[in-house]
Length: 209
Image (cartoon, rainbow, N blue to C red):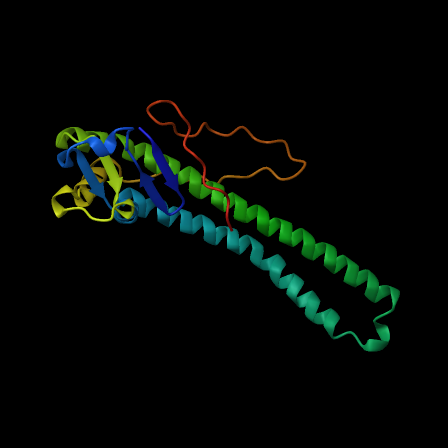
């Protein structure tokens, strides 16, 4: 089973080498974005991610406000003092402080991205057996994300069924804040990523802000 997952969108493809040689009845279609947004587990996961994101933002606010206040103060320095040792020292200290704050913001952005990916991995792990069960019931060999399909007759769309089955099996997703190692910090042991049925690791989404 080949699986692709990315932050905000679960993209699950079960297309084999000869998938398109299969009969129409062996192909199912589901809106997997809707699955992650409307299932109880998806809502729980997104709510927890939002809480973590807000907490991270709150952590940055005091330092950001303090730096802004210092910038404003130094901008009001009389022209006659701009070359003074005291002003230059304060200006240089502010520059260092601002650089360190930028690094902190990047670190938190990377932590949030890693947290989202970890949560989505767990969501997909919970979704896998539900998909397999549904495909077995429908005697299907392929499940395509509707975003990958140009046209499909309504009878092959199993989005609502997939949502119902997921709700019946999984209500919550454990979301744990992740920490990405910074320069000079020894990498921490990380849990092994979810794997496909053949044991191949899921591809990770490139980090983004």
